[in-house]
Length: 195
Image 1 (cartoon, rainbow, N blue to C red):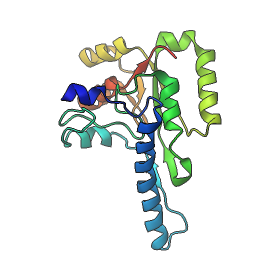
Image 2: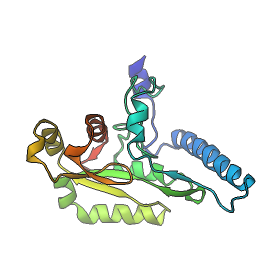
Image 3: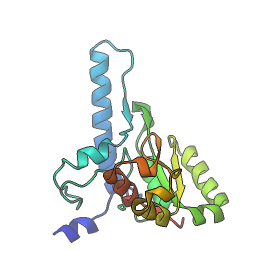
Image 4: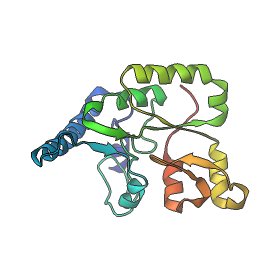
């Protein structure tokens, strides 16, 4: 049953029928919160889609979900796909993100992570990818360029990586100073090595 859940189409792959569900959920929450603020006399009231490790902390207290996520495992960071669910590459992931209308939030975090060697060899392609994302109405991007092997080694030998900086969600941090669960959540995120 879990394999069937994992094999289902997921948000972050530029699949309209799935992304439409994310947009509907986003619209209900963001517009509902905005409406409540206005009812209370605020001129403008909006959500901020930045979780600063809350996805890890809450996930460790959340039951399994219908997408195949196991019991007590971190949730997706901000409005990004669940770690590893975006299988169609960075273009598809960014296309899913731009479907969420920005007019109802006052800030959001879009995390994207590239393998260091790939990023260095394909800067012009990635630059074009980012330009297209912003032309389509995309919000800010939090870009991490890192070597997966370095992250894994840093968990075993933290003394060798005192200055390894990563984007978490809305902030940067020294990787070895993060809680183990947060490190694992960062490792679960897709690390793009192709476009």
